[in-house]
Image 1: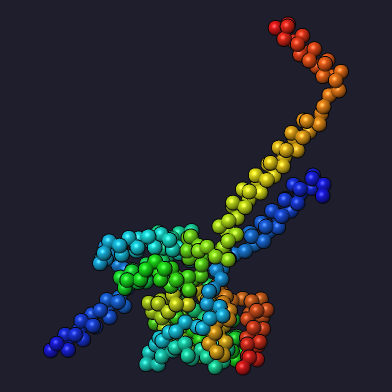
Image 2 (image 1 turned 180 degrees about the vertical axis):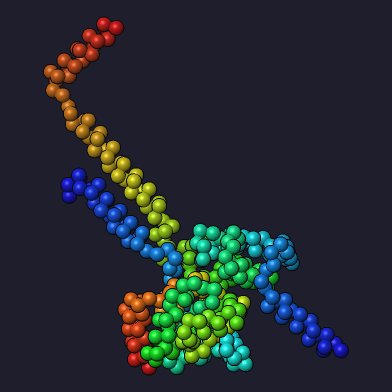
Length: 159
Length: 176
C-alpha cells in the first residue's frame, strides 16, 4: 500500500512538472518570497527574442509564455539567478540578457560611452588651450598698448 | 594632417558605421549552439508515434535539421526548396514545433509532400527551446559527429541554399 502511495505521489510530481504551461489569470504559487522575487526579477531581465524590445514579462508571444513556464519551473526547483541566466544564454545567446555580462566581447559596449566622454574632454582641452595661446600671442607693441590704455582711460573719464 | 580634415574623417567614419550597422538585420541572433553538440532530445515521430526521433539519429551523416509548423506562414515559402533538397539526396530531419498533428499532416499534403526522413513532434515546444528556436522556420546543419555547424533563421531561399548551405554540406561530407 505504501509503495503504491509512493508511486502515486511521484507520478503527481511528474505530472505537475510537465504541465508547465501557465494559465492566464491563475496566480502563481511560490514556496518562499525569495523565489517569488527571483521569478519577478528574472521576468524583467530576460528579453523576448521574438519581440525584441520587450522582456518576457510583457510579451504576448507564445515563446515568451513558454519561457515564463520554464522560468517558473526552474525557480520552483530551486535554481539561482546564475543557473537561470546560464540556461537562457546557452540556448538563445547573450542577447537574451537585458544587461549583458561584462566580458571580452562586451567590454566595448560597457566602456565605450566612457571612452567617448574621455575623447570629448581631451578634444575640448586641446581646443581651449590652443585658443588661449592665440590670445597670448597677440602681444601688442609698447606703443600700441600705451595707445590702448590711453584710449581706455579717456573712455572712463567721459563716463 | 590638416585640422580641417578632422570633421570630414569623423563624418566618413560615422557614414561607414551606419552603413554597416543599419544593413544588419536585428532579427538575426547568432546561435550559441554553433560548434556545440546538438541538444539532447527524444520525441515521438509525427507520422508514427510508436517510433522515436532523438539527437543520436542526427549523427552519421550531414543533416539538415529544419524547424517548421503549419501555422508558420514563411515555412510555406521555403517548403519547395526543402523538397528539392530531398530530391538532391540530402538528409532532412524535421522538428514540428508547437503544432497539432492533424494540421501538420495536412500541411505536408497540401504543400506537395514530406521532404523529411523523419519528423520529431514537439507539441509543447520544449525541444524548440533547447534549440533556441525563436522564429520559425529555422534550419540547422548538423555534421556527422552531431555538432551544430550552421544556422539559418527565416525561410531558406535560393541564394542561401546555393551559396552557403550546399557548399557547407559538401565540405562537411568530406570530414570523417
